[in-house]
Length: 404
Image (cartoon, rainbow, N blue to C red; front, side, top):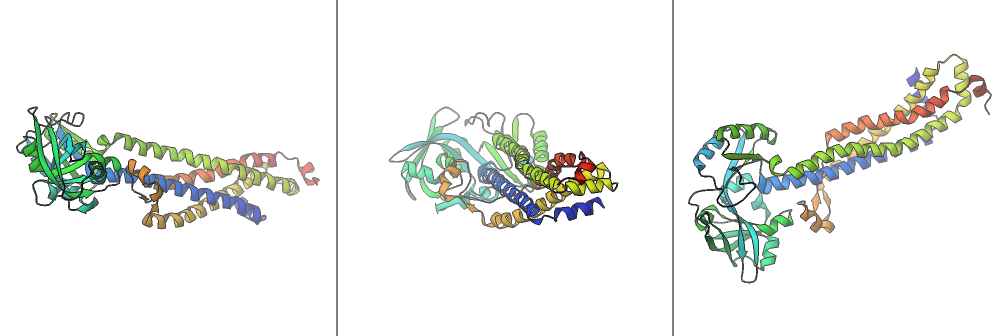
């Protein structure tokens, strides 16, 4: 009966109730759009780094990740390759030679990370070939090189131009070779495009006097959720002389940002809820003052104080639930099209590229945040009714009946 009374009371003053419900709806739309945009940007940063270079798991000689020098190469590649091939859940893998060096053109030079790769297997694990803006991603030429757009601008080179790469060899001498620019790529990260170059692995091994040695095995899994178990299995097979690192180990700051963001969304929802609570308090207080005589009659007729108290609580709860559900529905109607088309931030493309995000951001809504607003906003609506309900039950029946 109390709920039925509360429902009727909510719609006695439709304009006031609709204004409060409308404010809740606007708040929900703001939460969903803010969550989708922020979450989408962080996800794109992570996905771009994983798909272009980091991948799900990397294997090196112990200490290589902290000190990427050419001496830290994998001596027993066959053992590592056998362990990888005998581990379930690995979709594809590739071998790489990685070292820091110098790339020079006729006009300028720049410090770079030289990646000696297997072009065919690299295409199976990363999407770097899809970022090619001009030319091709390492053809059949042994001295082909693919460089980033930013690096090409700095060196003032284009397709077909010659460049010279130099780097230290394990013996301490300088290895060098001449390459011809076969492809120019442009990723979502301007920093990446400034320092990464790709050459065939055989040419890199020859230039650096590595024979058939490599520095890294990088792999993609069938399901990224299995990364912890696959990492543990590979670590057990390879022992302490190798380091097996997941993308969480290789991108700790980005993972920390995502965890921090998830926690901060509770705070954002609470702030929006606190902004709404004042409107609810005001609405419920107005309802109490307008119905003082009615409350007195109910008390005189025998309605208990706790029943009157919960009647007002239910009114606020109804407003909170209706506003939250309609707000989520409206927010999803706005979010879903944007999740497919994306939001174009070309005006801020340079700033976004410095963070490793493309000019178009695709919002991604987290289920956890939807659940949190479904809980928090109705609870805050109830909290907003506690004081008005208390004022209602403290009225004296005689005073309330004669109130003018």
